[in-house]
Length: 133
Image 1 (tube, helix red, strand yellow):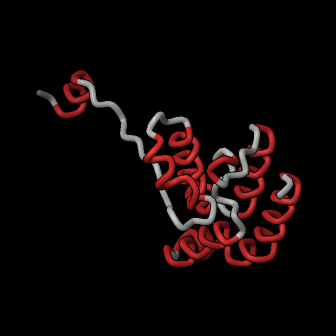
Image 2 (cartoon, one colour):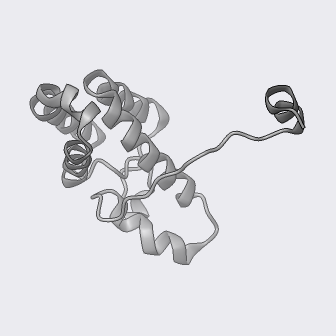
């Protein structure tokens, strides 16, 4: 599928399906899950994954355009799908071929949902300053 069609498909989905329920997505986890799966149903969850793994392999400007489109309609959905897309991109750069084969081909459709998480670094001086020793 051409990248311009992916962005057009995303725009139609976001305008017609997400815009009317955007506020609900902030409060209802099931609605948010369903909205994410809607992106998967349109094969929009593997945009940074290489074509060899059934991804769209979008370049930075086009992916950024998709991210902006999504954020215009729902920040909750934008955040959630970014977690998934980022994990796919990181995994696609891994040297672990078995892991890539197991996850990447099903990530674009949402059959495999993956996320990333970060926690802040904890430093001794932070603890001392806030909680003492």
